[in-house]
Length: 113
Image 1 (cartoon, helix red, strand yellow):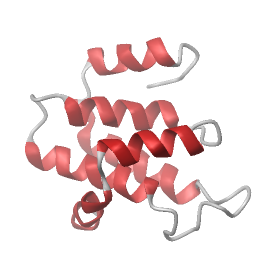
Image 2 (tube, rainbow, N blue to C red):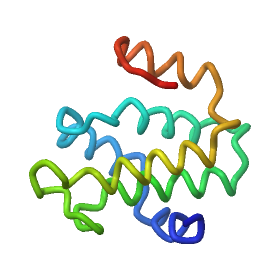
Image 3 (cartoon, rainbow, N blue to C red):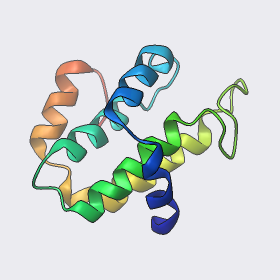
Image 4 (cartoon, rainbow, N blue to C red):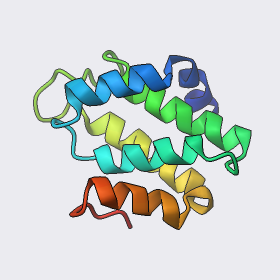
């Protein structure tokens, strides 16, 4: 899975991510977790390899065509949510309390674990 996510890192860019949030942000329930990944990527203390895997998770998510196309109602985001969950599990120790705090300011009701 890690090798697979590093492949998708090429599809990540901060500008593409922001554009994705503007279009799809209200449709996806895992946006707070996606933002946690984003803050972890931006943190200079996050090791490069971990950053690459996290970029791959966002890259996969912002691609419109993936294993389950996002436009399929009800199930289109399931694969993306699984990828985000796996990426957060992988990067667990690098997700700092300050990353979670930034997300809580944006999404006060979010369950971040």
